[in-house]
Image 1 (cartoon, rainbow, N blue to C red):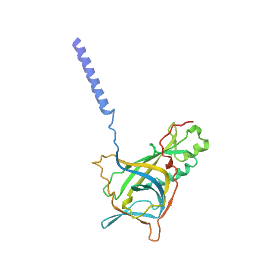
Image 2: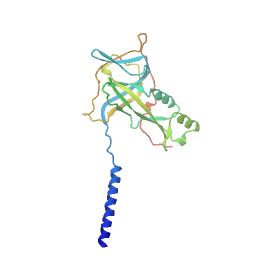
Image 3: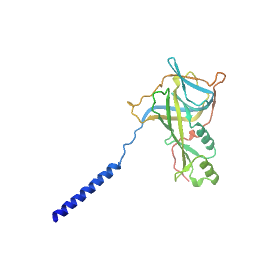
Length: 247
């Protein structure tokens, strides 16, 4: 009888340990963290709007059109030009809102970070995308009822502490040295911002495509002229990282 009790206890312990193993095996406690690898770094100093723009890449005798909006927003760096293919309208809308409501963008002081999209093999230029965090730099209790309605209408949602939203940005990276055009009508951002482009692949697995290819900027139509004009993007002048509320 005593032996039976011992075997029963051992059996129960075995079953429990087996269940525990299954439980931990099916629910991993710690997933491996994804590491970011910085592939490109630049300093951005200016921004401009444009109209009637067409961009193409010349590789030998082959000419490939780069898919960019005919009018939109671009940033000027020391090494590259960054043409936005998505998110420009939202930035301009939030820029207008920033004249009424205190907004702040970015997670790190004076730094923008974007992910480089993995090349599909047919890409003629590097493309990037990421979410730019924007938040109201004021506690909700300090905002009027009308201001709360305005920011909610603009897509901001409360995270329990402050009102926040993300602006999804995509664009193309064009080396300045490969351009046959001078971008001189730009508006200063007020200070220099560090911009970093990262991949989730290591340097040995990541291969930037066509960073030094010949890129041609031309009018959209034969009778059109490319029009550049500076804009004041005050929203990005506020890239300073989240700040504690002192109210």
